[in-house]
Length: 281
Image (tube, rainbow, N blue to C red; front, side, top):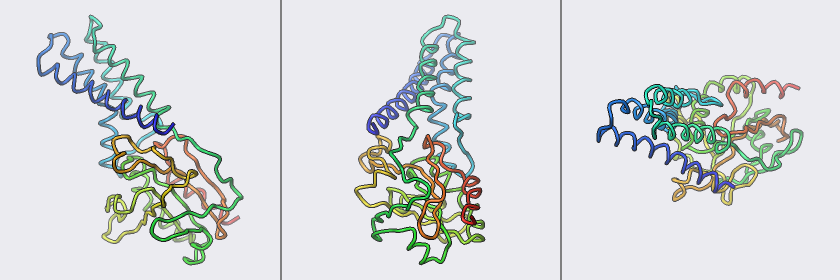
Protein backbone atom coordinates (compact mmCIF):
# COMPACT_ATOMS: atom_id res chain seq x y z
CA UNK A 1 0.00 0.00 0.00
CA UNK A 2 2.84 2.41 0.86
CA UNK A 3 4.45 1.77 -2.53
CA UNK A 4 1.19 2.56 -4.32
CA UNK A 5 0.66 5.78 -2.36
CA UNK A 6 4.24 6.90 -3.01
CA UNK A 7 3.84 6.04 -6.69
CA UNK A 8 0.53 7.87 -7.15
CA UNK A 9 1.78 10.89 -5.19
CA UNK A 10 4.77 11.09 -7.51
CA UNK A 11 2.52 10.73 -10.58
CA UNK A 12 0.17 13.43 -9.26
CA UNK A 13 2.93 15.97 -8.64
CA UNK A 14 4.62 15.07 -11.93
CA UNK A 15 1.33 15.65 -13.77
CA UNK A 16 0.82 19.05 -12.12
CA UNK A 17 4.35 20.10 -13.05
CA UNK A 18 3.87 18.82 -16.60
CA UNK A 19 0.63 20.80 -16.99
CA UNK A 20 2.43 23.93 -15.84
CA UNK A 21 5.27 23.42 -18.30
CA UNK A 22 2.71 22.73 -21.02
CA UNK A 23 1.05 26.07 -20.26
CA UNK A 24 4.41 27.88 -20.27
CA UNK A 25 5.38 26.29 -23.60
CA UNK A 26 2.04 27.26 -25.12
CA UNK A 27 2.43 30.86 -23.96
CA UNK A 28 5.99 31.07 -25.28
CA UNK A 29 5.01 29.70 -28.67
CA UNK A 30 2.09 32.08 -28.77
CA UNK A 31 -1.58 31.28 -28.36
CA UNK A 32 -4.73 32.90 -29.57
CA UNK A 33 -5.32 36.27 -27.96
CA UNK A 34 -8.47 35.07 -26.24
CA UNK A 35 -6.77 31.95 -24.85
CA UNK A 36 -3.67 33.59 -23.33
CA UNK A 37 -5.40 34.34 -20.02
CA UNK A 38 -6.77 30.80 -19.91
CA UNK A 39 -3.29 29.28 -20.25
CA UNK A 40 -2.02 31.63 -17.54
CA UNK A 41 -4.88 30.38 -15.37
CA UNK A 42 -3.84 26.79 -16.06
CA UNK A 43 -0.27 27.62 -15.03
CA UNK A 44 -1.52 29.03 -11.71
CA UNK A 45 -3.89 26.12 -11.25
CA UNK A 46 -1.26 23.44 -11.95
CA UNK A 47 1.65 24.87 -10.01
CA UNK A 48 -0.27 26.05 -6.95
CA UNK A 49 0.27 22.87 -4.91
CA UNK A 50 3.92 22.17 -5.90
CA UNK A 51 4.82 25.84 -5.30
CA UNK A 52 3.05 25.90 -1.95
CA UNK A 53 4.80 22.74 -0.74
CA UNK A 54 8.16 24.09 -1.93
CA UNK A 55 7.62 27.35 0.01
CA UNK A 56 6.65 25.40 3.11
CA UNK A 57 9.78 23.27 2.74
CA UNK A 58 12.08 26.28 2.33
CA UNK A 59 10.48 28.41 5.07
CA UNK A 60 9.19 25.96 7.70
CA UNK A 61 9.28 28.52 10.50
CA UNK A 62 7.25 31.12 8.62
CA UNK A 63 4.74 29.22 6.48
CA UNK A 64 2.49 26.57 7.96
CA UNK A 65 -0.11 24.35 6.37
CA UNK A 66 -3.64 23.37 7.22
CA UNK A 67 -5.88 20.40 6.70
CA UNK A 68 -7.09 22.03 3.46
CA UNK A 69 -3.75 23.69 2.56
CA UNK A 70 -5.47 27.08 2.04
CA UNK A 71 -2.56 28.69 0.18
CA UNK A 72 -2.49 25.98 -2.46
CA UNK A 73 -6.28 25.65 -2.56
CA UNK A 74 -6.63 29.36 -3.25
CA UNK A 75 -4.20 29.12 -6.17
CA UNK A 76 -6.00 26.13 -7.64
CA UNK A 77 -9.37 27.88 -7.47
CA UNK A 78 -8.04 31.23 -8.73
CA UNK A 79 -6.51 29.52 -11.76
CA UNK A 80 -9.73 27.62 -12.45
CA UNK A 81 -11.83 30.79 -12.10
CA UNK A 82 -9.55 32.68 -14.50
CA UNK A 83 -9.94 29.95 -17.09
CA UNK A 84 -13.72 29.81 -16.76
CA UNK A 85 -13.97 33.58 -17.12
CA UNK A 86 -11.72 33.90 -20.16
CA UNK A 87 -12.05 30.66 -22.14
CA UNK A 88 -15.45 31.12 -23.79
CA UNK A 89 -14.88 28.14 -26.08
CA UNK A 90 -14.28 25.81 -23.11
CA UNK A 91 -11.09 24.47 -24.60
CA UNK A 92 -8.35 22.22 -23.24
CA UNK A 93 -7.33 24.46 -20.26
CA UNK A 94 -10.79 24.00 -18.69
CA UNK A 95 -10.60 20.20 -18.72
CA UNK A 96 -7.01 20.13 -17.49
CA UNK A 97 -7.78 22.55 -14.65
CA UNK A 98 -10.76 20.49 -13.48
CA UNK A 99 -8.64 17.35 -13.59
CA UNK A 100 -5.93 19.14 -11.59
CA UNK A 101 -8.52 20.05 -8.97
CA UNK A 102 -9.35 16.37 -8.52
CA UNK A 103 -5.63 15.53 -8.27
CA UNK A 104 -5.27 18.18 -5.55
CA UNK A 105 -8.27 16.91 -3.56
CA UNK A 106 -7.15 13.29 -3.92
CA UNK A 107 -3.74 14.18 -2.51
CA UNK A 108 -5.23 16.08 0.43
CA UNK A 109 -7.69 13.41 1.49
CA UNK A 110 -6.08 10.13 0.47
CA UNK A 111 -2.46 10.22 -0.65
CA UNK A 112 -1.25 12.08 2.45
CA UNK A 113 -3.19 9.91 4.91
CA UNK A 114 -1.36 7.74 7.45
CA UNK A 115 -2.25 4.08 7.92
CA UNK A 116 -1.92 2.98 11.55
CA UNK A 117 -1.45 -0.62 12.67
CA UNK A 118 -2.74 -1.56 16.16
CA UNK A 119 -0.72 0.79 18.39
CA UNK A 120 0.19 0.62 22.11
CA UNK A 121 -2.71 1.99 24.12
CA UNK A 122 -2.61 4.53 26.96
CA UNK A 123 -1.86 2.80 30.24
CA UNK A 124 0.48 0.27 28.67
CA UNK A 125 4.26 0.23 28.65
CA UNK A 126 5.89 2.03 25.74
CA UNK A 127 7.98 -0.46 23.73
CA UNK A 128 11.76 -0.26 23.65
CA UNK A 129 13.33 1.12 20.47
CA UNK A 130 16.56 0.23 18.73
CA UNK A 131 18.86 3.21 18.16
CA UNK A 132 21.09 2.77 15.14
CA UNK A 133 24.22 4.02 16.96
CA UNK A 134 23.44 3.65 20.67
CA UNK A 135 21.62 0.34 20.99
CA UNK A 136 18.42 -0.23 22.90
CA UNK A 137 16.45 2.81 24.14
CA UNK A 138 13.91 2.53 26.95
CA UNK A 139 11.83 5.39 28.32
CA UNK A 140 12.22 4.43 31.99
CA UNK A 141 16.00 4.24 31.69
CA UNK A 142 16.08 7.59 29.87
CA UNK A 143 14.04 9.25 32.65
CA UNK A 144 16.35 7.87 35.35
CA UNK A 145 19.50 8.97 33.55
CA UNK A 146 18.21 12.50 32.95
CA UNK A 147 16.35 12.89 36.23
CA UNK A 148 13.03 13.80 34.56
CA UNK A 149 9.55 12.79 35.65
CA UNK A 150 8.33 12.08 32.14
CA UNK A 151 9.20 12.34 28.48
CA UNK A 152 7.56 13.39 25.23
CA UNK A 153 8.46 11.11 22.34
CA UNK A 154 7.95 12.44 18.81
CA UNK A 155 8.40 10.67 15.51
CA UNK A 156 9.33 12.95 12.60
CA UNK A 157 8.39 11.72 9.14
CA UNK A 158 11.54 12.95 7.42
CA UNK A 159 13.75 15.94 6.68
CA UNK A 160 12.21 16.15 3.19
CA UNK A 161 8.74 16.66 4.69
CA UNK A 162 7.64 20.30 5.00
CA UNK A 163 5.34 19.43 7.90
CA UNK A 164 8.06 17.67 9.89
CA UNK A 165 10.36 20.62 9.34
CA UNK A 166 7.65 23.02 10.51
CA UNK A 167 6.96 20.93 13.61
CA UNK A 168 10.67 20.85 14.46
CA UNK A 169 10.98 24.61 13.94
CA UNK A 170 8.22 25.23 16.50
CA UNK A 171 9.46 22.89 19.22
CA UNK A 172 11.86 25.44 20.70
CA UNK A 173 8.83 27.37 22.01
CA UNK A 174 8.04 24.33 24.16
CA UNK A 175 11.45 24.12 25.84
CA UNK A 176 10.66 26.53 28.68
CA UNK A 177 7.57 24.54 29.65
CA UNK A 178 9.51 21.28 29.54
CA UNK A 179 12.28 22.66 31.73
CA UNK A 180 9.84 24.14 34.22
CA UNK A 181 7.96 20.87 34.57
CA UNK A 182 11.08 18.69 34.34
CA UNK A 183 9.98 16.74 31.26
CA UNK A 184 12.27 15.30 28.60
CA UNK A 185 11.89 15.42 24.82
CA UNK A 186 13.07 12.66 22.50
CA UNK A 187 12.86 12.86 18.71
CA UNK A 188 13.00 9.86 16.38
CA UNK A 189 13.34 9.53 12.62
CA UNK A 190 14.48 6.97 10.08
CA UNK A 191 17.18 9.42 8.94
CA UNK A 192 20.46 10.31 10.57
CA UNK A 193 20.73 13.63 12.37
CA UNK A 194 23.01 15.15 9.73
CA UNK A 195 20.16 14.99 7.23
CA UNK A 196 18.25 17.62 9.21
CA UNK A 197 19.07 21.32 8.66
CA UNK A 198 21.29 22.76 11.38
CA UNK A 199 19.14 25.87 11.79
CA UNK A 200 16.20 23.64 12.79
CA UNK A 201 18.24 21.65 15.31
CA UNK A 202 19.84 24.79 16.75
CA UNK A 203 17.32 27.65 16.48
CA UNK A 204 18.77 31.06 17.37
CA UNK A 205 22.06 29.54 18.57
CA UNK A 206 25.12 27.71 17.27
CA UNK A 207 24.72 24.93 19.84
CA UNK A 208 22.51 21.99 18.85
CA UNK A 209 19.38 21.90 21.01
CA UNK A 210 17.47 19.04 19.43
CA UNK A 211 18.92 15.60 18.87
CA UNK A 212 17.16 13.41 16.29
CA UNK A 213 17.73 9.74 16.98
CA UNK A 214 17.79 7.33 14.05
CA UNK A 215 15.77 4.12 14.22
CA UNK A 216 17.80 1.02 13.49
CA UNK A 217 17.08 -1.18 10.50
CA UNK A 218 14.78 -2.95 9.99
CA UNK A 219 12.54 -0.08 11.07
CA UNK A 220 9.83 -1.00 13.60
CA UNK A 221 6.50 -1.44 11.83
CA UNK A 222 4.64 0.35 14.64
CA UNK A 223 6.49 3.63 14.20
CA UNK A 224 7.73 3.62 10.61
CA UNK A 225 6.33 2.57 7.26
CA UNK A 226 8.46 0.91 4.61
CA UNK A 227 8.52 2.46 1.12
CA UNK A 228 6.51 5.44 2.37
CA UNK A 229 9.07 8.11 1.48
CA UNK A 230 8.54 10.09 -1.75
CA UNK A 231 9.31 7.90 -4.73
CA UNK A 232 11.92 10.30 -6.09
CA UNK A 233 13.99 9.75 -2.92
CA UNK A 234 13.96 5.95 -3.03
CA UNK A 235 17.53 5.68 -4.34
CA UNK A 236 18.61 7.18 -0.99
CA UNK A 237 15.78 6.51 1.47
CA UNK A 238 12.64 4.41 1.21
CA UNK A 239 11.13 4.37 4.70
CA UNK A 240 9.32 7.12 6.59
CA UNK A 241 8.43 7.47 10.24
CA UNK A 242 4.76 7.68 11.11
CA UNK A 243 4.40 11.16 12.69
CA UNK A 244 3.01 10.24 16.11
CA UNK A 245 3.36 11.89 19.54
CA UNK A 246 3.55 10.17 22.94
CA UNK A 247 3.64 11.35 26.56
CA UNK A 248 5.22 8.85 28.94
CA UNK A 249 5.66 8.86 32.72
CA UNK A 250 8.93 8.15 34.51
CA UNK A 251 8.29 4.40 34.39
CA UNK A 252 7.68 4.42 30.65
CA UNK A 253 3.90 4.01 30.72
CA UNK A 254 1.85 5.81 28.10
CA UNK A 255 -0.23 8.66 29.51
CA UNK A 256 -1.36 10.08 26.17
CA UNK A 257 -0.80 9.62 22.46
CA UNK A 258 -1.81 11.29 19.19
CA UNK A 259 -1.90 9.46 15.88
CA UNK A 260 -2.60 12.03 13.14
CA UNK A 261 -4.82 10.98 10.27
CA UNK A 262 -2.51 12.70 7.77
CA UNK A 263 1.21 13.43 7.81
CA UNK A 264 0.41 17.02 6.81
CA UNK A 265 -1.00 17.65 10.30
CA UNK A 266 1.55 16.46 12.89
CA UNK A 267 0.93 17.21 16.55
CA UNK A 268 1.18 20.92 17.35
CA UNK A 269 3.25 22.45 20.12
CA UNK A 270 0.06 23.81 21.72
CA UNK A 271 -1.35 20.28 21.95
CA UNK A 272 1.85 18.96 23.53
CA UNK A 273 1.87 21.81 26.05
CA UNK A 274 -1.75 21.17 26.97
CA UNK A 275 -1.06 17.50 27.72
CA UNK A 276 1.70 18.08 30.28
CA UNK A 277 -0.86 18.30 33.08
CA UNK A 278 -1.25 14.51 32.86
CA UNK A 279 2.10 14.08 34.61
CA UNK A 280 0.61 15.74 37.70
CA UNK A 281 -2.25 13.29 38.08
